[in-house]
Image (cartoon, rainbow, N blue to C red; front, side):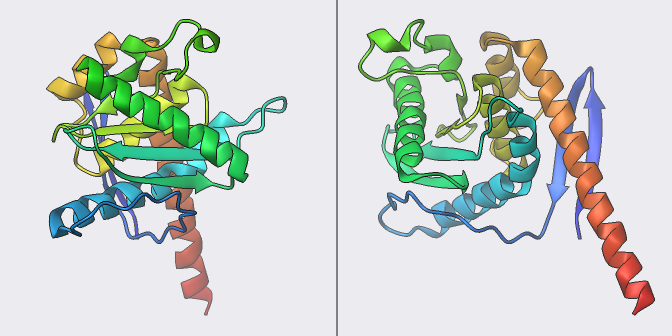
Length: 219
């Protein structure tokens, strides 16, 4: 059962999502030590949110001439240490390594530069730098950094924002969210993509719920 509440705030959309999902993750894992309950609970929320929006974002990412199959998330703490990394979708080992490197560089770059989104420090010509940084990562309200790599930069950032919001680590609207949006490239486009992704996911899940109800009624 999925419950969506969409609330409009001056053109912004907040998605409050209560969901029960099971996700399959092809781990790139670099597990954190200690196994603290708080970190484990936050990781579970983040991965559930990533799995929840995965189908929608994949559908938005692929075109006839550019097939996208997935990507890699990296989560880093406020001290610049990686907490975890994992894949969404189906990737070759080569693509997994490449996307992991991109997402890691986004998080590390944000930490080292002290910025709220990687778009601020995105490399103008990645071919000229050793470790390119792209748009598609942002800071969370608890001080951590979340980045995704695998799609176009605007979709990478859209995916991260949706996941962070659902996990309760980035409020839409909110101070950190608004700062990220204002300082990042393509603000209007990302806002539109967020609206579209929420609406598409809501429609899909409502359709699945109705189909399940119909099947129960015909049993």
